[in-house]
Image (cartoon, rainbow, N blue to C red; front, top):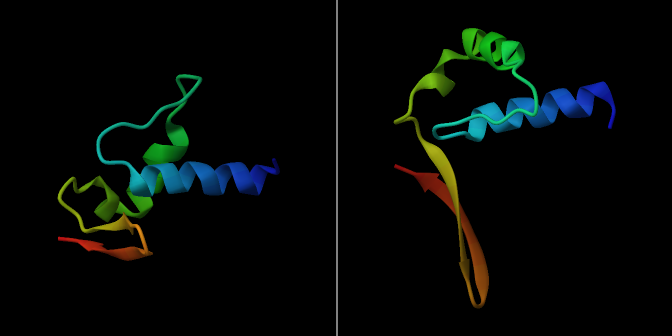
Amino acid sequence: MLEAEVALANETQVRNSTRFICSPTNDFEGAVEYLKKYPKYKDPNRRRWDIVSHPDRIEFGRVD
């Protein structure tokens, strides 16, 4: 993976996390910096996307 792809994957993990962030090392500086820049992602009650699979379709929508 390119460095930019790794950064995007890490940012996506932070944005979509609900409680924990995993890392193979004990280096969470990137997550800390991202949350300083975008503090709304620290709110555990923020709105999120949900994907619901039905036999004939898939629905995407916000979870309130």
